[in-house]
Every structure is written in structure tokens, then in C-alpha cells.
Image (cartoon, rainbow, N blue to C red; front, side):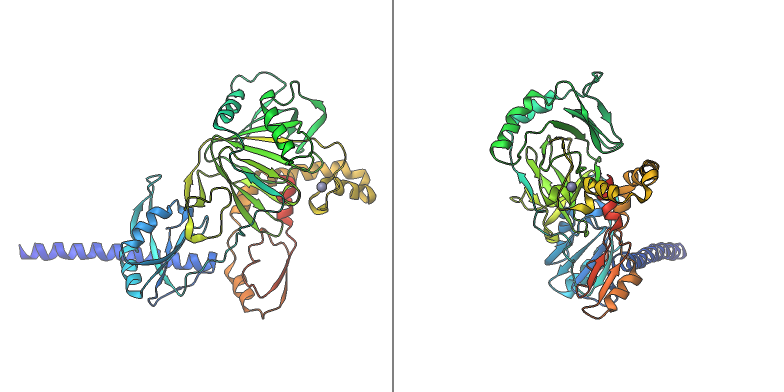
Length: 452
Ligand SMILES: [Zn+2]
């Protein structure tokens, strides 16, 4: 009997050590991934600070759930959850508490509250908890978000006025795009050339129900001209729209977008790589004018949860870079009414790098390839525009990780060095070493901006 007991104990020990080995292997793998993709160095001695791999907003872990877990091990001084990342940082009051959390949480299975999916946490010590604030807290210049612009009653009526079913009427062509449902009024918006047929207005124009709202916008001087084109988009949770700038030659300056049914986070990007996430509350009006309309791209990331401020009271406007106050918010069905005024003369904005009107004029002045222009434009449309349109969101989201060798190189340069980042992608190296003067050409950013 004694032998059997010893044997069982031995088996148990074996099983335990096998599990421990597996956790150790995964923990080391997490260390390498953090170093390789994020430049985060894990260390072997105890500190007050931990990095929790798989415990990030990017894994679907909510701030609420993680905070409860880490607080069980001691007094938490800070819990930083960077947006979209698969890890978090936690800082404890003492190294003893951090060690306790390390022992308790490394290899721990966590069932996510919102989705019932499971993640396994891998915990490592880091020297300090820091996250470079990549998102400025100011709105892009020219952007406004007006809270509660319509009443719940007006919202209901506007939503009911859109008939998504049995849309055989040719005038208001409904497009079931891959990412969302779309309907056009006033003028059809063409996705093949991102422009409107200016000589072919649709019968019926903009629905009567929108008039009051547009008059209010004129009175409050959000717009100079009354819009004559309306695009209604309906986004289910998980759907989005790739980053784009509304074609300059197609529409005048001010663009209005009313959010109905649910709130959503819209991402604005400057060509230099700077990103601002803006909360558009339900029933709010977004006004894009000037720089925010002409130079910044805007888009909605296809996902089921948005990253938002955890604390109440700061609903409208930017999602601050305060990574100590971010959590996940489940999306609902959002219907947007986007009003634009069709442009009748070429755009002469002050942003020629993203202005199709001014680029066309430039081409006319340099007739080198004049004969081939149509053929070249076709080729470009087929092999560049279409491809980028398809892959833009994925392309951008997969190019966020700096290469460690390049991070190492940039960090080693003396302060004040001038660096040209040619083919910089989405500008992921811009913030690595603040002491450098970085110049980027941002080919990709411009492509994303112009094309989509
Ligand atoms: Zn322009």
C-alpha cells in the first residue's frame, strides 16, 4: 500500500513539474515577444513592477476585471492598460506585494467576463512602469463634437425614416459593402473613384426629416453651405470603415456626421503618424472642417469593443492617453448620417500633399506622361488603390511593432542626431528616442489617406 501511495505522489509531482515547465516555457516566450515587438525588457530580480502578458485590453480583458485580480495581491499604485495592446503594467506599493502577485498570477487562467473566452496570464518583472503617451488629448484642429445634438425622439424618427429592406427603388441605391450597410441620398457616392456623379442628382434629394437639423447647423455656423448629399451608414458591432480622407474635389470643406443608435470611437490620424481616438456619443454631431477635414484621415476600426475612459463624466471628445483609466466598451448598432456639400470647382486648400484637385492641376502642368495618363491611372487604380483599400486596416494594424534591432539602433544614437526614416510605414519609430530629429516620408500614410 505504502508503495502505491509513494507512486501516486510521484505521479502527482511529475504532473506538477510538467505543468510548471509548460508555464515557464510560455513565460519565457512572453519575455521574448515583449522585447521583440514592444521593446519592453523583462528582468529576473524582483521589483514593485510587473508586466502581465495576455492581460491587456487587446486580449479583451477589461480594466474592472484585471484590477480586481491584481488588488487581491496587495496595494496597487498604478494599473496601466495601453490601448489595443495584449499586456498591462501593474505597480505595487512594495516588492513583497509584487512578488505575491507574480506567484499568484503567473500561469493563471482567466475567464473573460464579456465573452467567456479564456486567457492565460504570464507575469514578469520590469524595472519601471511606463507607457509613452502616444495619443495627444487635443482634438484635431477644426474638429468639433456636439453632444446631444438631436433629441431621443428625433433620433427615433430619423432611424425609422431609413428603410433598409426591399430597396428596389433605383434612386436611393443601397450598397451592402463588406463592412457595413450604406445608402445614398442627393447624389450617389461611387466607391470606385471615391467621388460623386455631379451631373446625376438622385430623385428626392435629402430626406425632408433632415431639414430642421441642417437649418440648425447653418444657424450655429457649423457649416457655410447647406449640404446636398447624404450617406447613411449602418455599422453592426465588429464592422468598420478603413481610414480615409473624403476626396477634396468631391466635397466642400465642412462635413457633418450624426451618430445615432449607439456610440462609437473614431480614429483620426495625421500624416506624421499622430493618432487621436475620438468618442462619438449617441445623438452627437461630429463637425469636420479645415485641417481635420482635409489633412487628417478618419476611420472606424472593425471590432466589437471600443477602448474608452473608465471614469464617467468625460464622454465627449478624445479618449485621453491616460492608460490608468481605460477600459472596454461593448459596441451596439450605430447608424451615421453624413452630410456633405458637393463641390463645383477644384479644391484650393492649403494641403496639396493630400489634395486630388491640386495634384491633377500639377499633372496638367507637367505633361511628361500625358499620352499614357489614362492608362497609368487605370493601372494605379487596379494595383495600388484597390489593394490598399482592401488591406489598409489590416496593414496598419499589423505594422505597429517596432523591430528591436532598429529600436536598439535609435536608442544608441547621440541626442540631436538627424534621422531620415524612408518608407516609415505608419511612423512607428517616431517616438522611440525623443532626443532625435526624425524625418519621415510617410508614403503609406499618404496612400491610406488619399485612397480609402
Ligand atoms: Zn484640397
